Image (tube, rainbow, N blue to C red; front, side, top):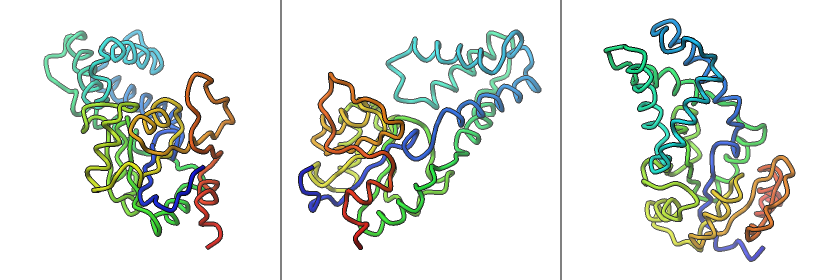
Length: 234
């Protein structure tokens, strides 16, 4: 990897980079399902949490032009469910609040907080996510100088607009940023398109897709990123 001396900004993906997202969404869907069953039982008739989530995913896939704004899409889906079940009142906001509280209750990977604390002493950190996680709710704002998500930008990674928005907010150039994320396309390809260097966080020892240009570096956890940056020698 070429010299990292000019790096001043490190951007991080959130879901599946700082925490595992599948157990979070599974729990959030179950809690939402139980809330709906208690307050609006016709919505959940004939469904399980898993089947209702599958319906939600189908609903979202049918609207690819809106995929950058997951919160709004889920509210629209909830509104659709209520109307289809014959409920006159709009409960989407309240139902979404139930889901969102659980969605932002996460378990960080073991090394994450110590690594963020270490890196924040040397670099400006920015959260860069296609999802709707909230670093304020999760309690990570003390490490990050900015947070940029696809709903705010109006485009999702790998669109370079995500990276450009972060750089513009921080007043930095692409050459000063290093992006870290788990997704070969969203994170690595997106960074490459924006002229930003990329580190692939490959926690599960997956094979790199042969059709994509390799990342600048690969690490298997974030402690290895500290070593890559030479901070383990401090």
